[in-house]
Image (cartoon, rainbow, N blue to C red):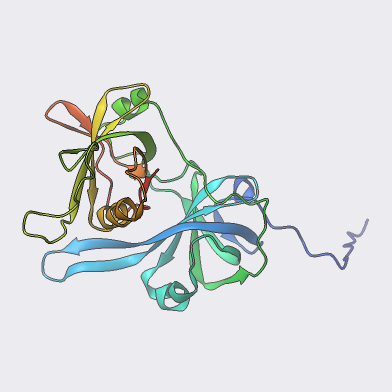
Length: 250
């Protein structure tokens, strides 16, 4: 009977790409850039907002974007180490089928952190790993996905109105009482479609307000990621789900 021989070399195994990950536990190494992360919460009538975990958006050396998740019982271990734009390595993870509702990535698996996981920062920047990748779709795609609570695509267009104010005069982003509002509504003209109403809430509204006010000139183009298209009064209106990656006035 022939014996199986294993040859051990001094070279470390190359990290897996997200496309090579299979469902279930994995002990191989992943290497990725953390594009964005945010708290996942659910509302309870008696207890208010409850932290479920931390959602992550990650991109690997092939440019594949994947969804990651850190459960609530592991948040204290990792949340202080998370930094947008940094590169990390991860071993000992669990890959499960991604949820159908509100998908933020095309990858079919979500990478889950477990009690045996080891995630660490990579000190040097790896230029081969992209810093961002957008899922910009046509107006027809938005129309087909209305009210389905499915994929959350990205949208880019020309700003027409900001909280009902035209851009000819710099809009003032506050309420009539002088305090900032938790909601901002903009009219966005798509290249291949009509004007859409985009509602920005809470963290997304505050991010837009800060970037808009900090711009030396009035921004005229807006990129919003992970929007949830809905029909309001017969019109397509993609409100951003709470809390999405921040919008980018250009």
